[in-house]
Image (cartoon, rainbow, N blue to C red; front, top):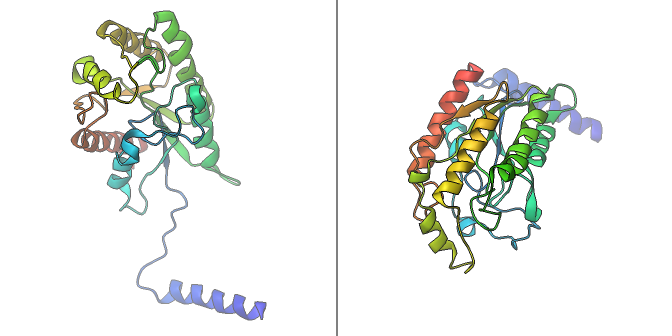
Length: 259
């Protein structure tokens, strides 16, 4: 009986291959693009995190990962986007979130075949919550930034580069494109003690982080959030911003991959 089933299945596959008008095209070699970061990429927080499974707008808000997939899903040989980002994540992995390194490891290992290695070709590292607000310490000195965000992102970059994965890093949003005082007002509804970084603290974060990461050979920055507009909470990108960002990233990746 098993032999008969096998023969019928084999005949069906052969018949489709020979008589179908459309050739069978596998999706076995599509390049995988990994996305590391926090809520800009994926608003859903990790299970078991210290904030009680909270998620931005109850996960009804869409992250950049959704927009990137929408731009490439109709191409059978197109890029495959896989996110390890988690809404609320810090680069250190505090409060039960995955650290930058843990996200990198998950992306690499989950994109690996037994025979032909990893299909992970590129990783884009986006913005973490370090030093933005008091849930993760907005009062960051230059030393804090170096020992926290810079250290952990560098650790992830080195892991990926050692495995021949190209790393792009999104520049942080310009302070004047955000409205952190509005974000403080909005999120105080949830947490009355919520405070945000001042302009001086935020600009120190941007300069220290970007200048440090720029020293790592082989890393390229992306101006993904250059024309940033928030969607009303002072912090998270609007629908139009994410559409524009996805178009920009896909164009950059196609050029890099010669795809």
